[in-house]
Image (cartoon, rainbow, N blue to C red; front, top):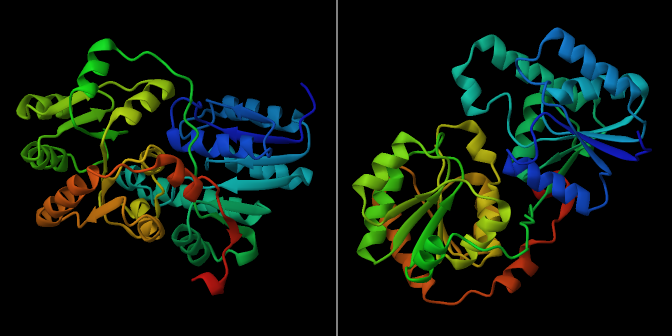
Length: 345
């Protein structure tokens, strides 16, 4: 194996999780990571022999700086790094110990995940988090020292800028309609809002495009709303082309999911990059973006359809104004990395 100064470990492949892709590319472009080590066997169902194999690969891994971005491979990476005296850094994408899908699992599993993260925070030299709210949550829950925590005020995305040819029918449809787009997972979203939004958009002559995995819920929604269209997940290049031809964006999150209080959704930064005004359900972690881009973000209370309709009306008015996406990129594509301190709370 070639000599490497820094390695990032992940248990998810790069093409599965857009959040991890974003952070990994950021680290690579900053010159911090020379190599990404993908280990698909280290996850919640990893067997003993697979785990031993991963540990052996860690022991043989060149020394330098190690990064980890999940509590599965990261737990073992942190342990071996601690034993070998290697500089170890943890990157938190989600509140794993509170993440909503795990809340449906056993109390033991939630406690196990919490212990993994607690130990990683103790072992690491520093932790990289997506916003101040998440940093403060971790500091309070695990009693982490301030000097260990870094926050990226803004998380850039780096979609493939190469031009691709879209499906001719889709390209023609985008060219001839005013379109509001949602791209991303559907499973953990309040799905009823998609139908409500389709109704509000139709009143203003807009189509609603959903780019996601095909599900029965989506099929029922498309059948029920004539202005709603679904497209399967596509490559980053294709998605880049689609977003460039849309007019508005949409995002929403369950208010009961603890993780959503601190999320930094990649789709939001994709919308901003393309100059798309967008609607999003209100939550604390996007407060700084709302303050930075008041002309672009129309938020609403998840429980208030009146607020959603009002946000749609404001968004439609905004859609008539051409937004300079290059100017927006200058405002958010340069991440601000800083320590969390009492002065910033």
